[in-house]
Image (cartoon, rainbow, N blue to C red):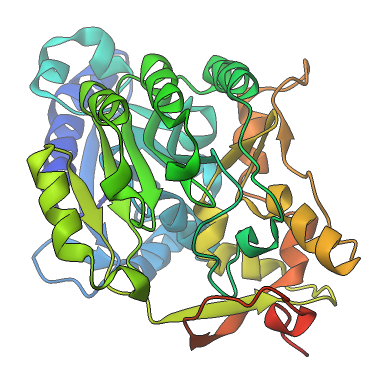
Length: 378
């Protein structure tokens, strides 16, 4: 009997456990293999229920050979990449981390779906998360912005035709994505935002599509954009900064009346300064960095975060030479799916110029930004 673990404790975890132990086990046994026992449900917090274990206990039982692998249901979109990083830090071999398929009752009656129930993560043509910019500039310009939007001196919009071609190229390797977030800068500044939403939905019909905005322009959304969002099941995520405080009730009412689903953060009262000019050699930093889970697409490349694509604005402003344009070239004819997914799990040279940072009160940056506004002295 193969003893494995499943991540999580929701209905999706229990559904995956049930299918693995029944239909999938029957398939394995019928083909001369061993059956499966899901011996534990791995949770990130303290275990609360019978059968749950912590990540630390899983790593110990994995090291002893009691548990040989872990399966992550696809329904865990948020935090998926961070979970994989945590597993790697705890000594779990990447080849023993499996992805499940999207779950539904149809799985039980479709032999093809049963056979494809789980896949090693490096072989699975799936990403839990993708983001891309449609504007690099912003209408708020937060101090310490890690996207460097305050340093963008004139409007910079993503070229739609290039984006469309790049997303189509990505789909050749990754036909399924959990969550796709459309960012900036401020994405509502882009008058062609609706085209980006429509193209994204055309290529990724099963993805959750979210426009991430500071909210200041929501009341100015036109009917065409509203209709496009509704027809393509895109919703709004508001990053709640202090200037929005007196407008939030009106914005909520606007979104309700136009039937646009939305989520919103708590009000952000502090930003973290994370930039250094002297590179460090702490490769493990990458596996603790939440931004390393933010797979980003830009200009034909895919990278673990947006920093390689936006650092050019920092370099231009201050005459520095931090690494830029790293990431996977999606048009490299020798590229394989395994190479692509492996690259997203490895630190970039640019990562050596980020640190955990310290928090400072939120504020809008002045027109004459100085190097001290961005750099941590070490």
